[in-house]
Image (cartoon, rainbow, N blue to C red):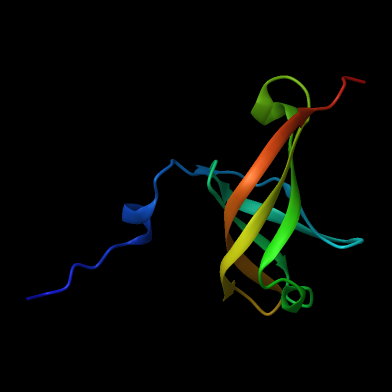
Length: 112
């Protein structure tokens, strides 16, 4: 009997949106910058500098900044906690990180 091969798309429960937005990993008092490739309510794929990728391996806090072009109003910050599922060496300078979002909250910033 042949085993069924499930692709990543088949396993996803929510729609992911292609989104290039600032992404910050927070480890203790250290903030590590990066940017998203795609985002859903249950997961995120983001890129970070390869030199910082050894710092992240399990659970982490994060902030995503959604610009007004996406929210159609003001800047919106998504703060939450994630868990690394896998890392991909995408180039000599960047590491891709697939993470599960454990929980999050959204906060709109006041208009200037």
